[in-house]
Length: 246
Image (cartoon, rainbow, N blue to C red; front, side):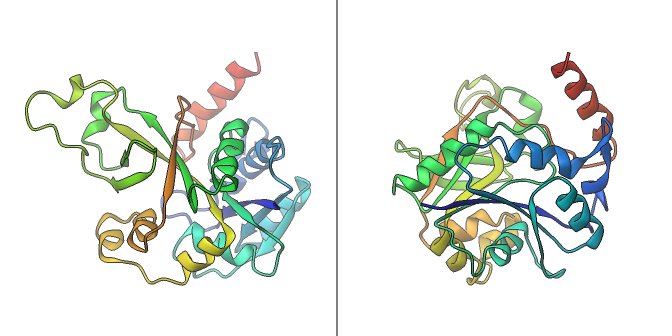
């Protein structure tokens, strides 16, 4: 089976325009992401999907292929789907373009979840250990069944703890991490489907996958990831990188 990893990187980020080219410890953010992607053993090819000539050039300088995509895509998933059109892909991985230090082994696990045939889509979640995150709508929660298949994703606290303190319920609440692997046919079906009511209400595109009956495998990980969402995140990420490099 052929596996393609796609890094969507648009210029017009709402909170941080042009962040893909922001210098992080002397290299543009997109280069850090590309270098991590190239360490993923299961990927046969890595592509950057962008709508901007400057990001396109930086991606090529990083040594991977780049696809110029439309500027009006409503989500990174749509950009990823356009990037793999006409390519020989059985499994497609959507790698977040603002996660410079993601775990390559986690990507391998997501790919294997699709290859095994148990799900059309795979993602990851980490235990919520900070009580402040429970009621934070920026922290997406997921509930899964005994097989590890997603039941629902929400910005609200799920499951609700009727009696007692939710922060005392160890292991009950899980934070969703925004990395995805798809079977290629399911990806194309997903982007061909209009947004559903729950997706529009929560602003979570994975709810569309559930709406059309997709099985989403949720893999557990202890790695919360480090994202660059705003300019204020840059110094923190640089500090973490410096610490890891010794």
